[in-house]
Length: 160
Image (cartoon, rainbow, N blue to C red):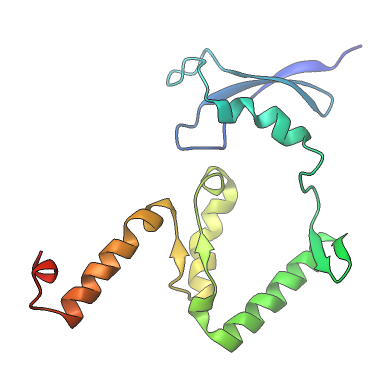
């Protein structure tokens, strides 16, 4: 008896949040299609969503935490991984200051419940080094203009 079935999910790759009809058999993805009942995408999806199957079955995809060693990579438990991250973040913050820890929020994290905890993490780390796709394009220019206004208040660019 085949356990082939269709499960419906939201594509995690961008803000369009297209509905997907994913045909699965056991733990394997058989096909990925757009959901024709989705009022926004009407069944159309981009190439990123079609690639979900290949991404899921990629033999090089990380499925467990790993740690770099002198001889390569070794699998570690989730408890070990969390302890490693905690100790390294604290050491970096102690040696270089809060802003040495940078954070990036964007796709696909914004489509996951973990996104709800991001503001708490940012506040707990007390770092001003928080970025997103908008920051990459606009924040440096805004900061440059603010810096120019502060240090060169009489320049033509600073007055704009």
